[in-house]
Length: 184
Image (tube, rainbow, N blue to C red; front, side, top):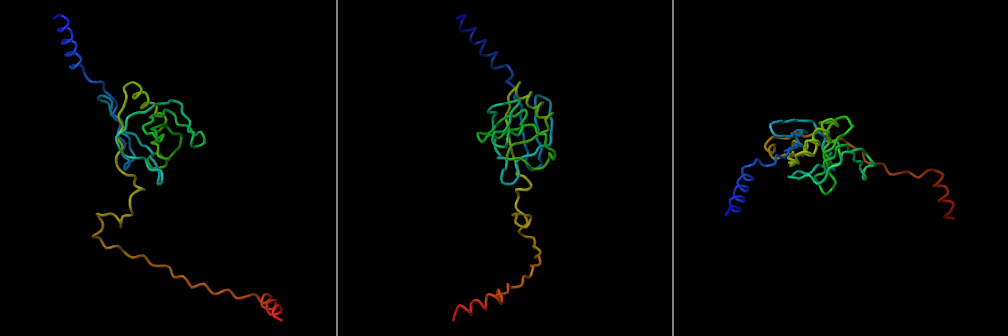
């Protein structure tokens, strides 16, 4: 009976204990922003996601592995400091020394400044993380005139460039005389 009470008390305490708080990472491809929430602290940072042809996939992900000092095997040993891998394709959230954050420029990874990547890496290392990627990049959208919400608007025609038809090539005089000489 004492053992039963002990297990009942232990189960009650475990159920009442706060759940292990993970870092919630939300990436919005349309705004090129990453939002990370840890407890009561929220940060929002500029990112660069995948450029056209290398789009960052949307979805819900878990952290697969982490490497503080990683170099890409696919892209000439490019540095990927504080890499948090989330995809079997080798995609990661990582630091970047490149300029131009805030616009799609990567091969599918999510780039942050190195200082922000280090802070995020430390948070995830301590508490784990869930990663949600939503939206579409601005460069991946259809042209404005082809979007469904714009089908009722008239589209202004653009002028067409006029091209002259190609003139048939005239044989050079020396070719003509050689041809005539070969006939006889």
